[in-house]
Image 1 (cartoon, rainbow, N blue to C red):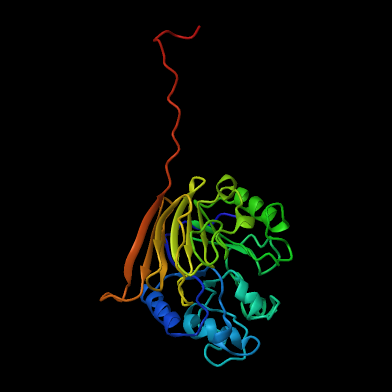
Image 2: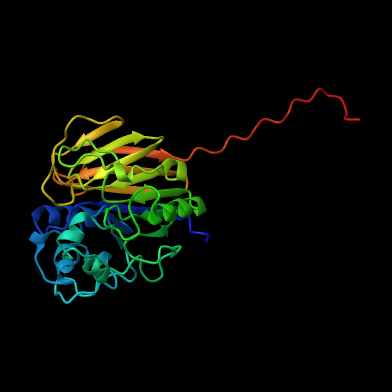
Length: 308
């Protein structure tokens, strides 16, 4: 598989599926950026959004992100089947996608979304929509189901973890991004870190790990890579406890989303909150990831004599 290397811009939202004013504000912020696609860190539906069956996601997701959706299966009226020519919305499941949307099943989630979608570059190796991969431009995304009731397991040594390790090793993309709901590391006061998904992502080849679950924003540096917790898409905001090792930036004052621009050489990442005079949002954190060119060894010294 030889993925394209064109530059891309994408948005990341998390814990958004409330069908409330906060979700609407974040969705408007994202729409103003005109991103190529949207990635979520889970909890794409909460019970307050209402609806029955697949219309639950019509209320929580389609109503706000219809222009990014394709082949969404719903009997609802707020989004129909989606307005995108090809799927441009890539979620991971959160715990509320199991408890509230099912309920106690993945069937509503997998029934609504078609993942990664027709025509999307993917290894197709997972064989299901609960966890999957796709390639956009210079980035290979690995969408993990971190819920402990995942049939293929969510702990190190599970079938899902072995899948991720193999796929990261096989990736030929400049950037490898892992997305999951539960944060491996978090200073959040509500949930905190999730030890069962503290997999050796850097050793396996990941460059960036994105998660949600905690309804705040945090950037951490752990095990030689960057971890980001992004759960401010619309749910009630959570505060922080004692900072865990590696915590660099923490924010919980307003809702928002991440805006990421990626080329083969660099990723520019910003978290922007809603509000302010600029409809593009207020930058609360920004950082860059840069690919360092390999260092070629110096040629051996020559003493000027011919080799006999």
